[in-house]
Length: 458
Image 1 (spheres, one colour):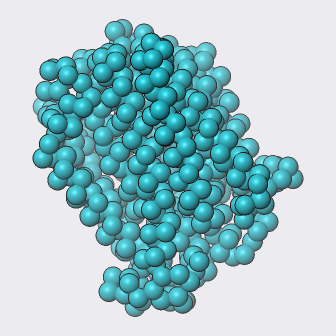
Image 2: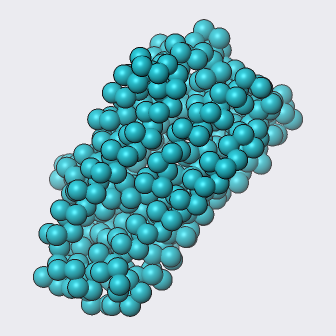
Image 3: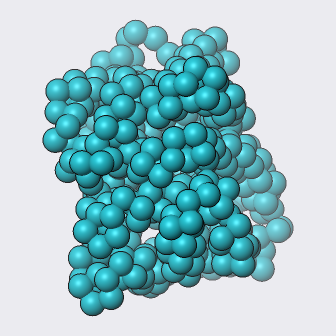
C-alpha cells in the first residue's frame, strides 16, 4: 500500500484518521478549559496553564520515543526487516515506561518548586498544585500511549491510532462535567477525568498489540534494550523532543513574563489561547503524521518520486487549512474567547492577544510538514534545527526583548515574528533536501494526482 497506492488516496487514508483523532484530542483540551473557566474561574484556568508546560516535558520524552521509533519502523518495513520492527517496538515500550516512572517520582517530590519555576504565582499555586498532584500519576499511561500510537501509525494502521485518541478524548469530555460539577471536585476533577481517559487509551493499544492484529511482532524476547536502536530512536526523535521541550520552556518563560507585565489574568488568557492554537495546530500534525509512513517507506524503497509527490501534496493541504482557520479566528476572536469565560478583563486581554498571535498562522503548515519530512527520512540534524528554530532560537529571545520595548504587547508580537522567520529557515532547508533527491520529473506538483506507482529510482 505505502509503495504502490495513489499518493492522493494514500495520504487521505493515513491522514484523515490522524486528523480526526488529534482534533478530538485537542477538543477535550478546549472543553477542559471551558468547564474549568465556567466552573472555577480565571484562577482555575491559570492553575492549569501553569501545569501544562510541565506536561509538555513529559510529552516531549514520549514524542521522542514515538516519532523516533516510528521512523525506524517505517524504514524497516520498507526494507522488509520484520525482526528490526519488533525490536524497535520493544525498545520503544521499555524506554517510555522507564522514563515516565522517573519523571513521576521527581514530580511528586519537587512539585512546589517546579510549579513556581513554570510561572505559578502565589495566587495560582493552590489551583496548580490541586491539578498537578493528580495529573502526574497519568505519566506512564500517557507515555506508553504516545509511543505505541506512533508505532501503529508507522505500520500504516491509522485507524487504530485514531481510535486510541477518540477513546481517550470522548471519555474525557464525558467525565469532565461529572467530576468538575457533579462531584464538585473543581480543578482536581478535571485532572481525575484526564488520568482515567489516558488509562482507557493505553488499554485500547495494549489489547490491539496483544491481539495479533498488528503486523509488528510482540513478545518478551523483544523487550531488551539494544544500544543501536536506542541511539537511533533518540537521534531521529531528538527534533520532536526539542520542539516539545522548547514549547515547554517557551510556555514557562511566557508565564513568568506575563506574571510581570500582566498578572494572573494575562496568564489565564495565554492558557486559553494556547489551547485554541493547539486545536488548530493538531490537524496539521495529523497531516504530517499521515505523511511520515509514506515518506519513510518510499525513501527506504528508493522511490524518490513518490517522496516528492506526497510531500508537495501535504504542504498544499496544511497551508490551505491554516489559511482557513486564520480567517475564522481573525474575524470572530471575541466570540471564540467568550466560550471560555464571562470575565470582562479576561475577554479584553484575550481577544487582543489572540489577534496578534495568529497573524502568521498560514505559514505554520509548511514549517511543521517540513520538519516532518526530515524526521521521516532520518535526517536528525535538519529536523533538530527546524524544531529549535521557532521556539528556541527565535521565539525565546523575542519573548525576552520585545516586552522591554512594547510591554505585554511585545509578548504577543513575539509569536508571529517567530513564525515568519522559522518559515524562511524551513524553506531553505527543504529546497536543499529536494535537490538531493531524484530530478523533479514525477515528483512535480503537476503529477501529484497521477498516482505513479513506480516513482523515480536512483
